Image (cartoon, rainbow, N blue to C red; front, side, top):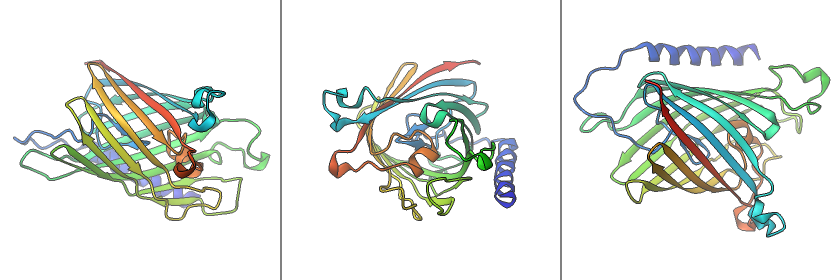
Length: 278
């Protein structure tokens, strides 16, 4: 455990060092690859602008094959409220709280490289996330400490836009400090793959697949989502269909069991309200 924590502290320190480096003045303008800081179920390489404050409301409903009895899943909602802030053009952070296991989460995101017009060909962003579940009477008394209920991840978000198409690959390492269902590996490796197709200046279609290479036996499926992104003045709106209700790393990496072929999919949305504090 101490070695794992030391690694994450080191990665966090590297992010802070990168943040402290001044951006080089360049004539080429930055290319905006995605419409917001989130795409599909995960983070994108985009950061809020300096001084930009985002209020994020996420909903995932129940299985749509529940019919009218559950109003196609609308009766069974999972929600997350979050706040994101851009401290500079290189660094952003955010916090959130989800009804899924009453989980609190936090993230730090650092833009290391940015795709430029006639310049650097892709963007590279580092992402560090942490979450803690606070549901009572789930973990055994001897493993109910703060760190036992915590999980964390480090991700490298590599993205590029080519015309109307945007693409991102995100090698990720996830550490779940305790799993009470089975005695299986606590460290999971995945590479989320995301694509976005710009339909109009304000609408894009997105698809995302997250292969987990050492998937635990209690997880039946890899996360897969399809959605539409809408951008309006002051708002960003995303409609999603996926086989998971997860809205942060632990939930969709360790608890995805829906199957698209059997109609076990969930509808959801993200609503981002943008405020400018500078």
